[in-house]
Length: 314
Image 1 (cartoon, rainbow, N blue to C red):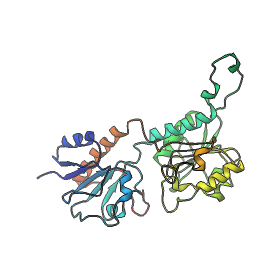
Image 2 (spheres, rainbow, N blue to C red):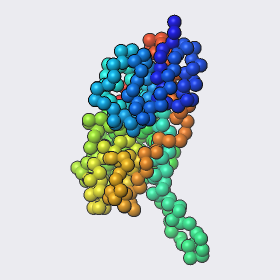
Image 3 (cartoon, rainbow, N blue to C red):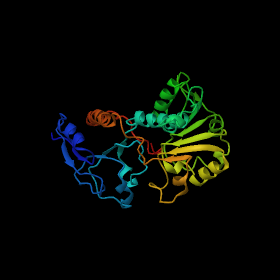
């Protein structure tokens, strides 16, 4: 019996790994960066990523009677058209880039506390006793406590930070690295750093708004590594102007990229990076490992890892 027909929008490395699978799949390489919605009718499995081109996808997709499973590299699936996700098994790349994103968050906080470039000595006049800050004893708030939030918490706890977190699901009382927050307001009012790590859903869109920011602990630094639409950027600017927040590190914005001249780009108290927090680390190797395990499960008719729940969107 021939193996499944798999359309691969991803790397040649992924295709090479699939070609060695014992099921003998037919792998069709279709780089997805330009028109990813042009999927061959014979496709049973689609491997894709959050390409910018998906934003131009038609409202109605092609007739794909054989497509049964979509595996994404990205953890979030809100950027894919509804027609691709409806009525099909969709599994995502949840957890693949958690370590890299957690390192980005730690780097962002260390940049605030220990700005070594500003302490550089080039001559005798630069030799000044200007103390540095530190993370030990600071409070970190996590808005969202999935795989990314947990990876951040492990690293922050190792630095001596006290970690509070807000999550949608139940709380494991044996969790060693964080304590639960009663509400978003209680969280933002108690911490020195707030990391937006929740997925983008109808419930979280615009969640970090003027009302929430008004409850912030004075001097709060906001870090967003999730999705730009969770943060009301006008409210963020107002909070920075008012001195409620001391600064922000934004790896995601609305839109991406921000237009030239946008007020967030001109501020010394805001660092905007080009949506790169997920890069680095062993994400590709972990994706291939997950993909092959999921392919085995799919062919055996057993549950896959990290299946997206349609009602929740993640």
